[in-house]
Amino acid sequence: MAKSSRRRRAAKLNAKKGSQDDRISSLPNDILVNILDRLDVRDAVRTSVLSRRWSQLPAMLPQLRINAQDILPSKIKTGMSDDELVRMSNAVVIKATKSILARRDPVECTIRFFSATFYLSDDAPLSVGHAVGSAMVTHKIEKAEFRVLTQKKRLECTIGDMLTYGKRFVLFFNKCLNAFAGLTRLCLQNLRFAESDFVSNILVTCKQLNYLGFLNCDTKSWITLQVEHAQLSELSIVNCRFDMVELTWLPKLTCLAFEIWIAFNEPPLSFGYVPLLEVLSLSNVAYNRHKMVKLSTFLGETSVRDLKLGFKCEKIWVQPECLAGRQAHVFHQLRILRLFGIPEGYDLTWTMFYLEAAPSLEELYMTVVDHPCEMEMDEKVRRRESYSENKGVQWESPTPNFKHHRLTKLAFFCFQSEEYMVSHVRRVMKAAVNLGDVYLYDRVTCIYCEGVEPLKPIVFPKTDEQMSSVEKQIREGTESPAIIHFLSAAEISDDYLARICEDG
Image (cartoon, rainbow, N blue to C red):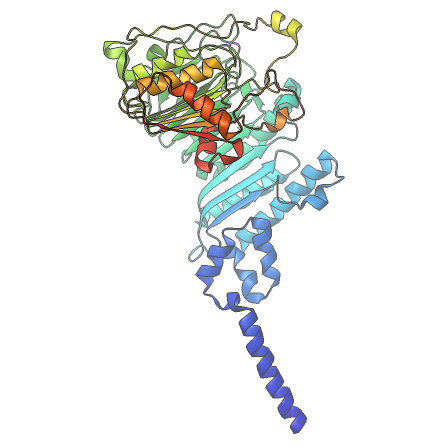
């Protein structure tokens, strides 16, 4: 009896201790699900082995992102061939997708957003597509995204590879129409379609799309792509070969990225009915043959509020203008301007054109840098392909004493203590009478340029004495109250990092 009594007391003590150690399990389901929702799918699913209760929680997650690129642990990836990695990653995506969707209760556990990233190989696309399509029919998924990858990356793909990937995608698309009809986001890359009207078929079938992204995609024959869609709010077309892209009717489009039109003299893009377009990203490598683009004519009747222009460390392709009358209206709504990949060593006075053209501009971000990883460095190739050796552009303001009253923030990335940069910051400070902060950042680290010597020495002020000297040079002849901040690249805030992201 005494032993039995002691066992009961020990059991109670252990139970009490266990309940204290596992307080997290005593939390309500909605809180535990909220915690799991902050983990990636792999870690969230691993918690299901803890207990019967925990095994049910992954099926209650409101958002699911299953990504073939990071679903396998690093130690498993080590030593695997590309084929093995793709095959195993896809297999895990299929298993996770089917397992989680099969256990969902459509009444209590509707997925608000589902994202699947997988490779376009084997039967993985069909398996994922059928599972997602069935879940949509039973209302288990509200919004869904497919990010379709190819085993070879863009620079590795031959035309033959792109045609093969294009055929695989067409087969996937035609056999999973239920899934595509309900998609709200679709990201495609490295596809060449044999049928010239297939891109239009995507737009017609995917009626619920909010986002559509093409990277290195085209058709076998050059076509004029007319884009009409009732729901599309974001469109990204990067390094794609179309004769012309006509945004005919996009009543909800707010964000557009259109980048790299190397084969054309002018951007092969025209704006039709895009009344809500606010965020626009244009980027290109300009050769000698490219015509300068007059944005006042090109942008037409749009009212962009956030504009990004990228130059890929090569020739400036935007023509500074002296705007008047109706042309000036194009920039009246502009609040944020981001100028990226401006080549080093050239006068920056031309950028003052935007201050004069955009009276409502509040934030200006500039990156002046030469990236060897992006640039063609072979002189013979540069001459053969007609790269421009004089990358700059000259412009003289018609109103030298011009004043801007809305600009409050200037962020200059890859700032160097060189006269053409120093004088430009001074120029902006003189014009922007209400400028509050000037952020001067050291050169941003480029992972692709690691180990490559910069084309020019880096002369960013490091010591307090150097900073004081450069600030004195900048302020010479100005009465601006703006605060000048010298910051390392590591001190770039997440918000700023998002703004200067070359792919954002």
